[in-house]
Length: 342
Image (cartoon, rainbow, N blue to C red):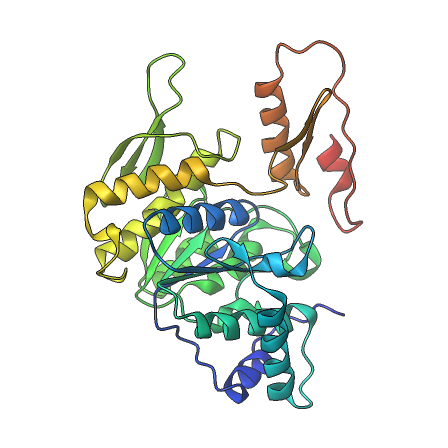
């Protein structure tokens, strides 16, 4: 029932289950305070549009546990999930595992059997000591660094950044979607000789200049892509998330790590897959409209950084509306409730 950070027990059970820390395909690991779920959903949608077999692991779920473990966008079936849990339960012997550790190992077990072309793992909490971090990523994504989970990660961006940068791997690529990362993040990337690709520097999302034109351009150190559609997820900030996801795929592509038989080896088809995936992407709970009269949105914002994005999104969508906007807020007591409400 408790959260317990640390990799020793998880690594031990992984070995007992005869599983490896390296998949037979590229792995993208995604950490960050906000934006992780959106970036994973975009990566998944774009890779699927390119015809790849994609496995992704996210948390938490909204309706059903199976949502956390997806194969080509579909929640894993009950029997597959139960079989994986049974395998991990037998492998662990008397080793205690937390709820999240158990689920992470089960997801890894499922993915090894799927023989995917790409695996995407979302960190649950922090990064350095999170169960997801037992796997060796080819590309690490850091979406943002803001104050959250202070009891576990510290109450300042430097300590939080240090924990999140724990997913970086020596000599591998890091995509940083945080415009002003803490020094601890940059130091870790330098220490490990990572290829550090940062938004606002090596890549960016640029809006088209024409009035009422919602299309945008990715400026990238790999290849620029113009006339991209707005992502299927609402919010101006989602273009930055989309840029981060695209550059991660470009990084894999530049190293020849994406399967050679996929459409991603052809630039025009790559761009088409990117555009198709972005337009199709959906993710429950991210400024999701669930009613039209009256208009009702639901959103998972639960920290100051996310609340600021949500406030600006409400303002941009409803600046001409008459009457009141009501907010119904529920969150755990360890959050900055007053800051979010303000």
